[in-house]
Image (tube, rainbow, N blue to C red; front, top):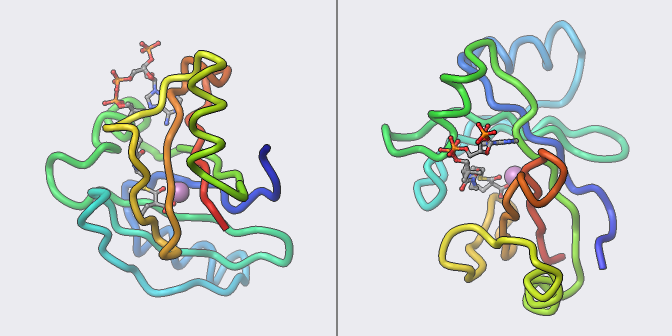
Length: 134
Ligand SMILES: CC[C@H](C(=O)O)C(=O)SCCNC(=O)CCNC(=O)[C@H](O)C(C)(C)COP(=O)(O)OP(=O)(O)OC[C@H]1O[C@@H](n2cnc3c(N)ncnc32)[C@H](O)[C@@H]1OP(=O)(O)O
Ligand SMILES: [Co+2]
């Protein structure tokens, strides 16, 4: 079911500083910030030869990453995103296997303009997992 690793997301308390670290200190190609109001975050993508790093910053006080940053004030790895061919088939298989699909269970359009869903970290060995249909 899961395919390539699409991205690893890091929630950060200071987006400009994180962009400078990846762009200047680490010498990577870093996008400009994009507000994602449907998801309550601002996203920046760091392009790597074999995957991407998604830098996440809260957008609005109801952002789903506010609690995470309160628990991890210096920031931290927030989720990993795997690619799937058919997100509805994947969703139904995951639900049948007992995994909790977050939100209303219907895919939303993510940062790449593709449908995404999230699986509860408690069902994924402590890791918030995102699946993205590509
Ligand atoms: C533009 C879209 C973009 C894309 O790639 O296309 C994105 O990736 S958007 C990313 C932001 N959106 C989301 O993260 C949506 C899914 N997330 C959620 O619904 C929440 O973050 C949730 C439910 C995973 C956690 O919410 P919250 O922290 O408010 O809940 P709790 O405090 O009750 O936590 C419950 C329990 O889970 C542990 N937890 C929370 N977040 C994580 C995490 N990122 N990784 C691992 N574990 C996590 C938390 O510590 C609690 O554990 P406990 O042992 O009960 O203390
Ligand atoms: Co993501």
